[in-house]
Amino acid sequence: MTQSILSVRVNSNDKKNFEQFCEQTGMNASVAVNMFIKAVLREQRLPFEVKADPFYSSANMERLEKSVQQLLEGKGSEHELAEE
Image (cartoon, rainbow, N blue to C red; front, side, top):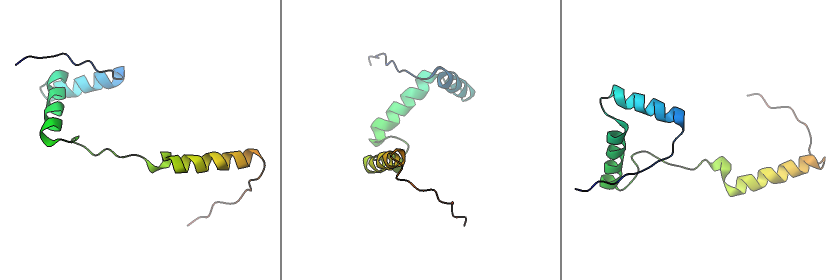
């Protein structure tokens, strides 16, 4: 079996914390990443849920930009927040 090198960029603090976690579980980062890759290939999916935040949808961002523009043009109005 041939092995290749995979280089990944990661935040230095995250790298340090990940390496500490791996050490506490008796493995190194290479073993953990290989476990992740094997799980993805075996299951043909990421081993966790990935979903988009609807706040950042194009329709919502367009609405927010329109609202900001209206406020900048003085077309907004103040109101009290309703308490439930």
